[in-house]
Amino acid sequence: MKKVLVISGHTDLATSVANKTILDTIGQYLPETEIVKLDTLYPDFKIDVDAEQQRLLKADIIVLQFPIFWYSAPSILERWMEETFRHGFSHGSTGNKLKGKKMILSFTTGAPQEMYSHKGAMGYTIEEFLPCYKATCNLCQMEFAGYIYTGGVSYGTRTTPELIEQQKVKSVEHAKKLIKLLETL
Image 1 (cartoon, rainbow, N blue to C red):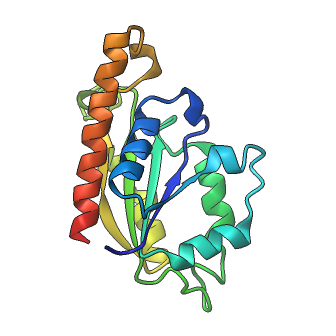
Image 2: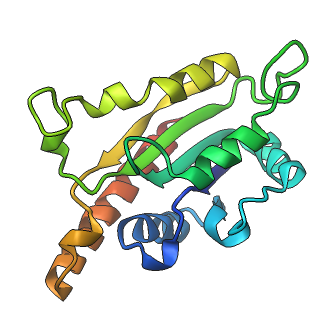
């Protein structure tokens, strides 16, 4: 399999059920995958650009793993992208270091999937929140290789051990779908 780099953009994995379970499952089934937990490495948001760019250079496939916060990626993942996807590295006249690499989005929402529709509470489909990532791939000459999405895994719905277990089951299913996608690339 190609070299896979998973960037976890959750701001506090210690309190996560879904994203933590997804990452743990990936680590269990694909132990050769490099998993970077931004919340642990950079709690102060001071990204080690050189180290992160070196990780990107070694990867064939980059997976961004995150919960949707306010219809976007969490601030730490946004900061990581701002810092590492620099002009001259990822784009610009001399910036072709990510050319040909594949990007996959793997994300969760607290709201159930049915709420992400034109008639649902969000008023938009989940696809309509993704153009910035597709544009980033275009700018950086990367291939947008798709996404895996699971809704309905809110912290507000884990009030009993049974509900927590349901979220874990959904999250393992999410991870297995991601692994299956990775195996096709």
